[in-house]
Amino acid sequence: MNITIWPHVISMPIYFGILLFIISFFRKHYILSAYFWIAMLFTFPLWMIGGVEGWFRWAKILSVLIPTIIVGFSRIAVYENKEGRLWNTLKSEQFLWFFYGILFLNILEATLKDATMGNYYNALTGFLLCVTIPFAPKFWRITTSKYGDLIAYTTASWNFLYTSWNACFVYAESPIYFASSLCILLAAEIYPIIKRRPELYIIARIYTLAAHLVLRASFDIFPMTMNASSWFNPDVLHIWGLINFILIVPYLFWHMWQLHSGNSIKSFTRNRGMKQ
Image 1 (spheres, rainbow, N blue to C red):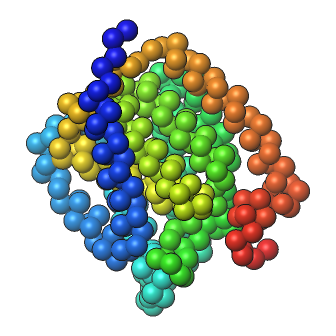
Image 2 (cartoon, rainbow, N blue to C red):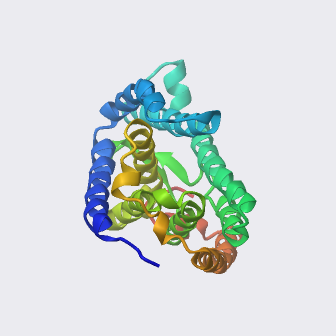
């Protein structure tokens, strides 16, 4: 199989670096972040020009952008201790279930799609990822210091499994976009490693996915700059999905044991000062 990689050698590192900057910038500038993503909703005329067709693609973009906006205003509510009926809702612990639910549905949506494509082992991996999301509000919070981060106490192992599962899903569902999607997945994976804080994975994932979808909807440059359709191999897909499933099974048992034994506070949060 003839695989052209030279365009990717240039474009992928550049895009990866831009995505790392986006994560860092929107983490630090939490107020600007909330209003920036509202502004991105008004780029919808470009989505029509760019060829976004069908209700599913529109729903996908909006289902990412709207929660990203809500994340921004929840960060403001908690970090600045805003008062008012709406602000109090956004900063309540129970509202953290909303973010948990969005993550759960995001994984479930791709899992069902995986199953319809016959990628069964990867679909099972996605289902088990849903099962092993740390519960809200116990393992979710928005910090009152250091930018008002949305924290989800996922483990480094869960982050890796999510990254590998999602990459395998994109490899099956949209091979042409695999290289660009790999960039957004690796940026979200590497950023928490650089910071030595696995709990930043979800917020990194939120901003990279939102940026990617808006860019793809407005100016879809990826088929020209990072076309990875020639990389697809059905044998690789099957083996990859099987490996993901093999890896997540012991993680599932470990996760359940931590909950059963009462060690989850320590093992999930890595002794970062959460109360019992």
